[in-house]
Amino acid sequence: MFGSEKDSELAAAVAELATAGTVAFGGVGIVGSMLPETEAYQRVAAAVTDHPDEVRDQLDRLLATGSPAGRVYAATLLMELDPAAGRAAWTALRGDPAELPTATGCVLDSTTVGEYAAERLAGT
Image (tube, rainbow, N blue to C red; front, top):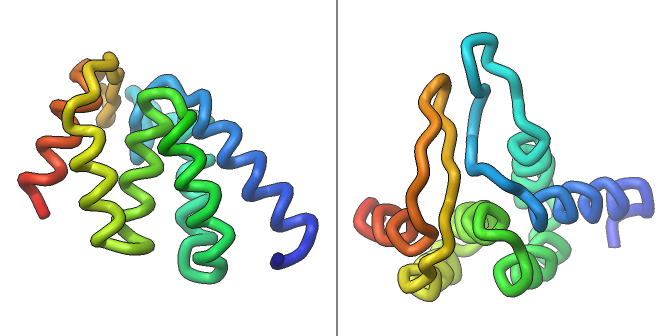
């Protein structure tokens, strides 16, 4: 473990991702507001390098039990942590028909988790 304050910060960030409603990796809207799930993603991403074992356990749970956006965030983070595990996660998600809202800047869109996963696999 890496300290109870950091543990609780990681747990809170993962809990936010577990219920995430939208995938957005940067600011959204005209003013570039950061969604809570984007901030949570960034907190977990910051822990990937320094605490990979703790993060890996959380990501595995998130892949199994998270919202559609949460599963996408988990697979994205797994690609950073362990590219082979990330590809395996994207492969498993490829058949997922769940609706997935996305946001890039001012552009709001919707796809399925499976279509998003297929795009990620095509880019690796």
